[in-house]
Length: 110
Image 1: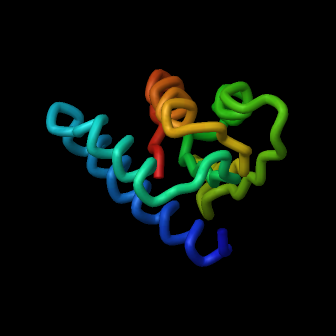
Image 2: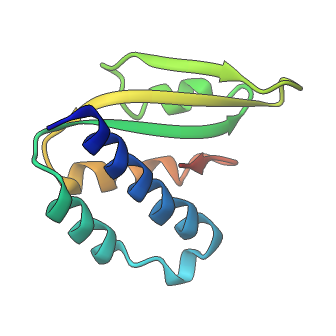
């Protein structure tokens, strides 16, 4: 699978997840899972991206503890962008990470 194809899948997933954060009641988990399965060959190196209040980085790192996390602080220092690349075996594993992330106070999943 090419880099740009994987990047396209990442942005497609971001749209679904951002919309789910804004409209939690209308998020269609099954539609998101179906899109992942239709457009992704598993296992896949998947890029997770989160924005969290400063000080919550360790909670994000705990989601995928065996993977390197890239952090970038916001200009005011109140938020941190966290990017983690992880090999994911299937769509259900990806959804589980996002569901765990949603329990972290102040997290925005992209």
